[in-house]
Length: 419
Ligand SMILES: [Zn+2]
Image 1 (cartoon, rainbow, N blue to C red):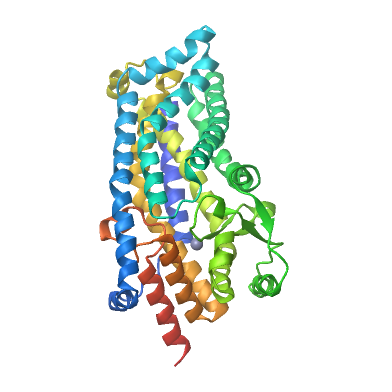
Image 2: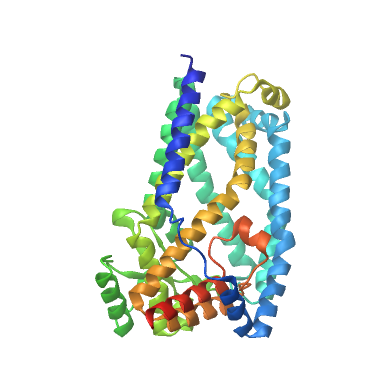
């Protein structure tokens, strides 16, 4: 069988593996709370707060969709015409057209161009966040964050590009197989090191101050069978007023992080509800599961890129002889961008299911639906979340159930708990 035949077979195998993992590991059988309960919850929220959140979201919306559209157009313009390939050649020219310069500098240049074109829209977004009082870091803080994120992406991108094109040169016929294994490994590695290497670039993390709340949270974790060494507090207030918490990392790098804003704004019972939700993610192994699905997906993506990218009409459009040359990177990036836009609603749907399960875990663990509900109200109020966002936007990109869904779920739990 030819490498192409093996690639088709591998892609089919990976496709089945992704599908099985998604079907088995994502909690699909969890119907949302009845719509009538959601609407009742919506009616009880302060009307002026809902109105202000909707104004804020409407102000963000045009820039957000424009950034997606412009990003797509730029990716297509660079990938489906000889333009991107020329940019790669240009980046390699001062270095005698060496393949490493083309692969790494050229690749990063293409990504940077795509980022710079949407920079005005990112600035607009920051202006809206500032106008509504959510961003607290000013323009210098925003610019510094931006430069840091470019630097982090450049380091990760350079490693990935150098590794990928080294493999392509060493195994011209089978690079897709090694590339797939490499992409999966990179996903696992990143999941492991992001909390210790990347997150500290943007925030300072300190163990939560000893006190009754910390003791209570550690006891909660122990009772849940998810021992945590510490609850970490992030200095999120340096850039935002928003309140949040999350779990990240794998094994020894796993941590529960709460924003300092949350400790300042919320009552101890509400903080407990938030941490109980995060413990739900830990106890259901949502980070390892996400990493596994991400790793399988990344491997499948490399094989699919090889197969689709070798399609002669595409190569002709981009003015290429082969998908394996560094000049073909813009074509690969265009295909990845399109796939990303198509897969966004699928990822959002899976995320909402996982988040709903963590909510159910929090309710069962604390047995305190009232605190859970007031925490949801506070999250919506402080973060200016539309408690019941437009359906199409929710379906396309919402990573969490809406505020009214979460409140209605808490009330359903309360009804069941108290007969
Ligand atoms: Zn969550």
